[in-house]
Amino acid sequence: MAKNFKIAIFSSGSGSNFEAIIKADLPSVETAFLFSNVPDAYVVERAKKLNIPQIILSHKNFKTRKEYEVEIINLIDEYKLDLIVLAGFKRILSPFFTSKFQNKIINLHPSILPAFTGLHAHKQALEYGAKYTGCTVHFVDDGIDTGPIILQGIVEINKNDTEESLLSKINLKEHEILPRAIKLLSEDKFEISGRQVHIKD
Image (cartoon, rainbow, N blue to C red; front, side, top):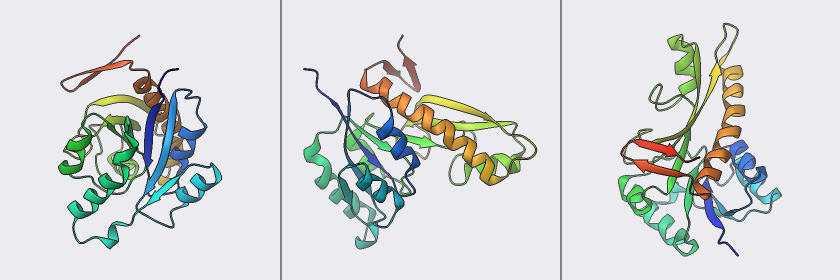
């Protein structure tokens, strides 16, 4: 019997993408646990309802980022994860952490990278007057939203869009491409060459 592709989902917010992953058709993927740094985040409630184990560890209990990340690594090391999925995880992971999991961490960003990096990407797109925006799943490297791109989804911005309506459209697209990216990785249907991620047929 083939080994399951074991993932952990890191999230700090409402968890709609967390739920989209759990409910997606990913037969070879096993979600080992949800990790959250926010004990009262709604994603924790979603995990409980979906019977997914949770590891909750607030960064506020640690003096330094490195101390916090050392403790995360200690807690998750035994799981032998194939992939860490950052889905609304509102903490920047340092090179100390990312180097431990090279090409094993992916992030979901609400823009068509390299445009509109950082916070409030949908607001940036509206203010810039962009005609299209969307979302990107990419590998995490030592930078901020700079890792090799796996998949992107595009949404159109119309003149009546508000921050809320645009974010809603982006979220729906996120729910499509994040599970799809995980499926591709779980089936080893990709190869990395420099900054390029080539999807295999």
